[in-house]
Amino acid sequence: MRFVHTSDWHLGRSFHQVGLLAAQARYLDHLVDLVRSERVDAVLVSGDVYDRALPSPETVLLLSDAVTRIVDAGARVVLSSGNHDSAIRLGFASDLLARSGLHIRSSVADVGRPVLVGDVAVHPLPYLEPAAVAESLGATQRTHAAVLRAAMTRVEADLAQRSGPSVVMAHAFVTGGATTDSERDISVGGVSAVHPEVFSAAGYAALGHLHGRQEISDRVRYSGSPVVMSFSEARHTKGSWLVDLTGDGAHPVVDAGFVEAPVERPVRVLRGDLEDLLRDPGLDGAEAAYCQVTLTDAARPLGAMERLKRRFPHTLVLRWEPQGVPVSLESYAARVGVRRDDLELCCDFLGHVRGGVAAAPEERLLLRDALDASRVEQARHADEIGAMLPGFEDLFGPGAEPRSGVA
Image (cartoon, rainbow, N blue to C red; front, side):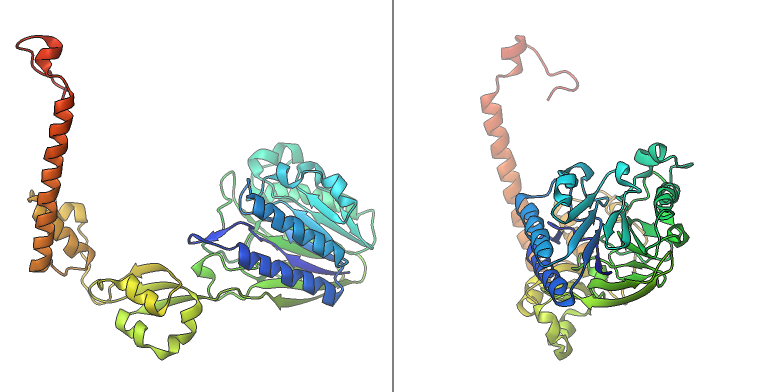
């Protein structure tokens, strides 16, 4: 059996308010071409097909079109639900769709029921939230390890009746895997880590949830997400595993190679003083990339984002971490605790956010004019409100005064 191991499509995801649907569509086009050129028997998607439980209509259409083209190219498609998916919505009409080559496993009732691809038994395990499924699976504890062991007991019971190779698909955090900033924490409800030995009965464990490509062992792998979803993944190579499984029993021969995915737009993490970044010829390749920039200038440069975007127009995140500047351990609130007038407070705050660079005389004038205009506007607004409201004597009679708590 030749199959593609992929996961964590997160269709509909945004990257710092930039939609990723075009990049995801490009990956799916690549996947269809891969299925056709490599004569793939099955595409296994190990969870987090969608990014949210209620995907948008265009996201659903993208998935529908992709799985249709993959099946038309000659491969079966096996989807299992992840922690981002709505298991019920993803599993709609699954029995009917299976007749056309699209196999969806999203419920506890599906655990132990394989998808047969030739003589290979593929066991897709949906994401198993311990608090929700421990009792129905007969798990001894409400932990991810316990519920996956219980699920694998059902899988092993099925495999005991078969002689061919097997694949298990699971969406979990397996010990030895490296996390990124873009995965949702699944530790709520129990201890999240699962030992890879849980999958020892499988010829190959096709894992999802972690967004970086990883080999826990030669038989236990993460494919990672096919597109970058956080700047912590800037050094990742995205793609899918192309796996040939031959032989019999629990220990077939596994021949796996990683196929890189196309990159819609690269991602770069830049760090340094603003002027150095703007002049550095070695950063020409970052001009077309999504950029996260950390400025190390001693003082926060004025107009930094505008200047950066003239060279790096796709800058999405700007940070400031001044180097060589003494760091006060006193909080800003404590430093301004002493009573000051409004102008001094504004000037102090401007100096705080700029790393100690005090307000210039012309800036003080601008702030003073803004405060004066604000006071005038507040007074005018108060007069308008007062003119619309009756006085206390009108409401409560002659000589009435507001009581405590009435203003």
